[in-house]
Each structure stands twice: as C-alpha cells, then as structure tokens.
Length: 176
Image 1: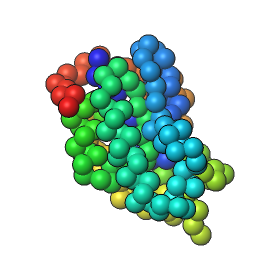
Image 2: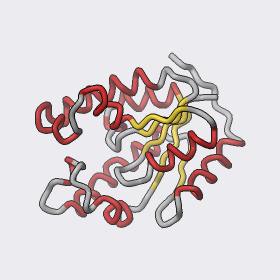
Image 3: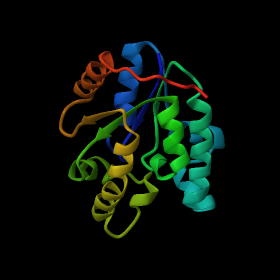
C-alpha cells in the first residue's frame, strides 16, 4: 500500500477522516501538525509567534519529508502544505494525495471558535477563510489524485468515498 496523504483547508476534516481511514485500513495515522507539536514541545501558535509562518513551514516541510517515506501510513497535512512547490512535488511522488474539498462557509462554522488557528487571528476570519480557499484550491487540485467533496456529510461517508475511489485507483509510487 502507498502512503495516503490528506490535504485540504483547516477544518476540512483531515484529522477525523484520516484517523477513521487508517483504522479501517489497519495502518498508522499521523497528523503532521500534531507531530510538529510533539517534536518541538510547543503549540503551533507559539511556533508562529517565535519563528513566523516561514519557520513553521520549514518545520512542516521537514516533517512531511520524513513521514512520507513510511509506506503504510495515513498522513493528515496542514492546510498550507501546498504553498511550497517542493512540498507539492514530494506529496505527488510519495503517496496517493486525497483532497478533502469543503466549502468555505462550512470551514468557517467548524473553525470559528478555535483559537489554535494562527491564520484566523485576524479582524475578519470568515473573509480570511474565503481568501485562503481561493488561493489554495487550485494548488490542492494540482497535486490531488482524488478529490472528495465534503461538507455536511459525516466523516464515515467521506471515508467510504475515499475507499471507493482507492479501490479502482492505480498510480505508480516512487518512495524516494
């Protein structure tokens, strides 16, 4: 089996769907953001405060590089992972990339009370989600092997859509 990599906006359900997908497939699940917190011992907002977004993105790239070498893994990435062209290339080469596409108004509902989202600590977070979605959606689609449209459905339904798509999916994977 190839590494399965979930991409999409914050609040798209990558962690929830990823955990369920990994459980059903009997493989390990890793959330990249949680892995970065475990490695550094500090929260994502603290990393942003001390190192800025650029520092966080460097840590994210290094973590993705290491984790995608593991063949039997479901990996949930951070929403901004696709901003770096080298990350997009790495994801495309090392796994099957699944884009969880969720409309901005649903993302807003899911994230509006979450204070651990540094990019949403702005005057108009709803507008910020819409801007980020407009900016990132083409990048997600560029790297995605499978696009799963989500929103109001439950995580189990999204997992079933992914499994159905994977059952007919053929992609040669280069692990290095």
